Image (cartoon, rainbow, N blue to C red; front, top):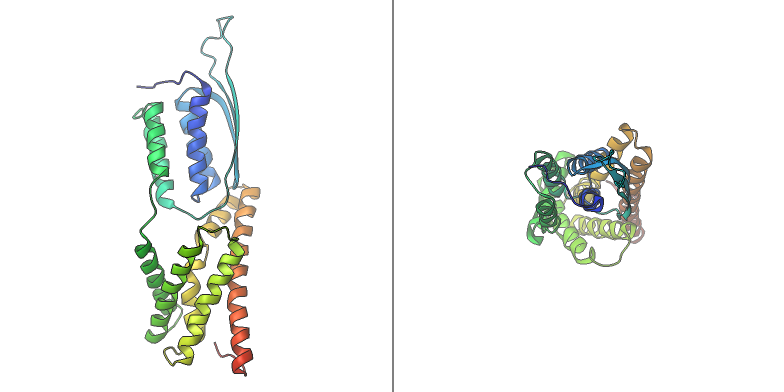
Length: 272
C-alpha cells in the first residue's frame, strides 16, 4: 500500500539520507538523483529539487496539492543541505540502497520501515581486517604478474601489499590527509621492494613496485569522475578527478622519494 507521510520533511529526510549514504560510498551523481527522486515521489512529494555535488546535497520540495479546492490547504515547504566528505567506496552499500529505492517504489516498505532498512545498510560493517589485508596482497601479486613480473617479483609484491594495507588500516582512522597517507604508503611499499631487491629476493624493481602500490590506486573514484563528466555533471566529475589525481600524485611522490634516497646511498642509475 502506498503510504504517505504526514509531513514533507519525513519523505525528504529519507531521500536525503539515502543520497548521503550513496555519495559517501562512491555512487555517481545520476544514480543519487534518480534514487532520491524515486523515494520522494513515492511518498507524496511534488516539485522535489535535488542539486547534487560530489561533496554535498541541496534539497528542496513541497507537497503535492491534493486539496487545491480547499481554501484552508497550505502546501508544505522543505529545504535541507548536507555536506558529504570524500571518502572511500563501498559499492555493496550503493547496490543495496539502489535496490531498496526500487522496492520502496513498489510499495514494499512504509516510511518507518524504509528508515530502519537504511540504517541497517549504513551500519553494515566493512570486510574483516584480515580479508582486506590478504586481498591487498593477492591483488598486488596478480597485478605484478599482469605487468610482466616473474614469480619472485610477484611474491615480493604480495608481501609489500600486505605490509602496505596493514599500515593503511592502522592510520586510516587518524586525522591524516589523503595526500600524506598515500605518499607514506607508497614510500613503505617501495622500500619493501628495494630491500627485497638488495637481498636478491626479486629481479625487476619496476614490476615489484607497480604491483605493490596497486591497492592505493583510486580506480573507482577515477572511473566515477569520468562517468559524471560524460553525464554532463562537470563540477562533480572534476571534483572526483582532482581528488583521484591528488592520490596519484601522492603515490608518485612516495615512489620517487624512496628511489631517490636509494640511488643516493647506493649510487649509480636505478634499473626498473
